[in-house]
Image (cartoon, rainbow, N blue to C red; front, side, top):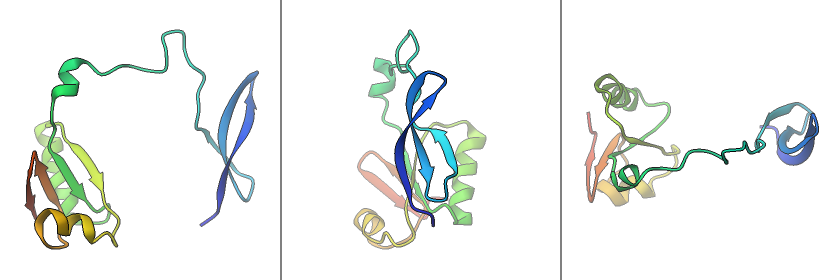
Amino acid sequence: MASCFVGSVSLKGRVGVSRVCARGARRTPAVRMATSTGWGRTATEEELKTDLPKLFVYDHCPYCVKCRMAFGLRGEKYDLCFLSNDDAVTPTKMIGKKVLPILSVGAEAMGESM
């Protein structure tokens, strides 16, 4: 894995920050110039009050992909949380063992949530 650092780059008169790889390949700018309307959209009060279910998955797990596909086909909104393969603490705290996918709704968590 190549080590990366953040450096200042001039983009046609605009100064931004760009990630530069140790081999010299420039990546996409991390900071973009603000538009006249601001940096982006602000969440509405309704969106802030909505408590979406959280789906904890591995990126390489076929069962996790199946759960994500079910949410996508139904058009349901959810928070997607990727866990690293060596993270045993998070699933153990939630359901008592290291098994994913985990669907968390409020204070309840359901393991192997297919």
